[in-house]
Length: 237
Image (cartoon, rainbow, N blue to C red; front, side, top):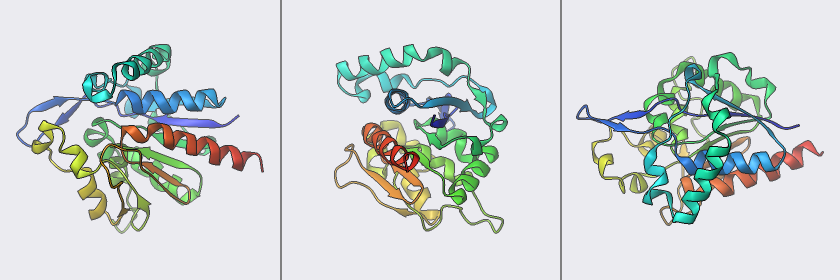
């Protein structure tokens, strides 16, 4: 059975430049949609967070920013169905990534607060990328690569092709004008070969060897389905 390590932010806030705290966490669609697709494929999913803390849902992701009402209701029902798994994640520093066929990071603003600076996560990402085994990050989750560095201080992801939430998409949020930094900028500064779709808030994924990334919440389904297709094909050969 294909095993997935599902790494979710444990942050419940995003601290802005003026010191104010914006309530945050994980984005509903980005957790629910890939989880459902992986589950329906028969994959075994282990949810992990920094410190084993239960992740916090960003309530904005179940409001108008989360899409049409029918879509938000569907996502909410699925999250309710996996409530026990979300409430009892394993501590990220207690898992052996080598035991998993896929390491997957969904997003939300939370990773900008914790995973971008988490040394355990950073080491995991560096090792996973170098291993050649599948690694996927969605929307804001590529912020986690900022903690993944080589001994000389350079990014482990320098030169790799990736996407993530664009500056333009981020700035649709009013509070983003007070953001300490924007993801697209930081990925480029890290030496990533960043790309984005021509139209904001439309699905866009990038695959570079074992590294899979999705630009925004709207990329959740396409990214997960691509992973199921590729990993399924690999496991059958």
